[in-house]
Image 1 (cartoon, helix red, strand yellow):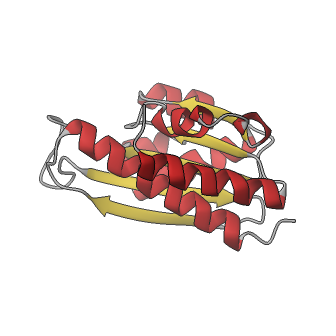
Image 2 (cartoon, rainbow, N blue to C red):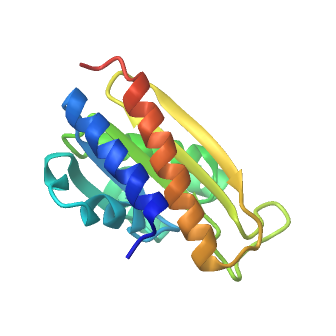
Length: 168
């Protein structure tokens, strides 16, 4: 289903999580579960992948992850604030040590001058209290390419979170 680059990054991430005894939760919007799919495509990933939340609509972000309605109203779903809240919500509602959250505009429509197609906000959160945000502007490279680039960026950010977490 995924190319070798995604599979390679996923294998490395799973190995790093196993070495630290970490479990992972995902909170996804624009990728619609592709990060969880990449993790579970690798046989034996059940010792690392704890659960995934696909929260495409704002109501789901609020209900399933505890994203504040005020944040959604003030910043919109595609924002740093919401990505951070999604990552923290995935941690609160799971038994994971680290989480990754993504929200963005995959297109082809739905973009605006402030939030163009290809804009994605990612956030990782760890039980040690750290939350890291990354903003990517992939451009109008097509829906599939934006979603794949987001998966790769999410795997990289999650690997950094695992490597830097002070939780043991």
